[in-house]
Length: 288
Figure 1 (cartoon, one colour):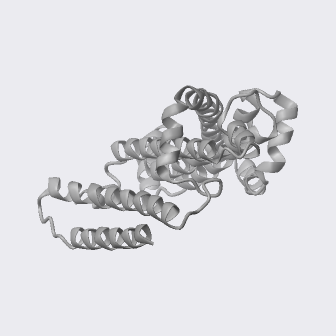
Figure 2 (cartoon, rainbow, N blue to C red; figure 1 turned 30 degrees about the vertical axis):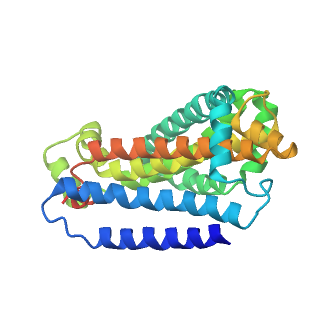
């Protein structure tokens, strides 16, 4: 009971600190604003882990149901070689390669669709239909077609990331204003000039939106696909195997690595977006 009370007090203290931080007006002090923006989520994250630790131990929750963060961290430290091998197999091979192929092919097909009204009316409805297909139905088929190694998982990722990129890019290319297009025609701009100087810049926020969505879908797709057949390595393989062995701390260690990898991947794409689309109102408003 003492640990439960400590968890409640810690939560209240952290909540009080964050409430004070978010009410601070940094004015024109950009460094103070960045410090506050960074401190609030860090304090919140630390609070979650501390409260989790105290409640699990204070309420005597069986570790097989929910291990405390300290136990998960100890497993991560003691299993670095295994986690690194799984990370390489799932993220660096299946997820990343599938992400590049899926997003790249979706972008290229979007340019072809934009040039052809027939493809635009015929392919986009099919894209919406395929996007609704459950991954647990696609993954076994890809394993049968491409084998049990990372290639079949990359194929699943391609299927999952292709159509979000296709749909968002087509919508982005259509977002350029009519007045701007008329101006390009007045200047005798060719299709390629209009594409590179007007329509692709206008579509950049849509494209990066698809890239960010796909950054999380890629890792999820690769992990789920490994449940349907894989070599004895990979995050999905390790999770399904260790669950059967009741090694829940190892399962949570894999989940933690996957969460960190997915968050870092998403954050990297977001940083590239801010550098490329610095002119967009959504980016400029966030810097003021």
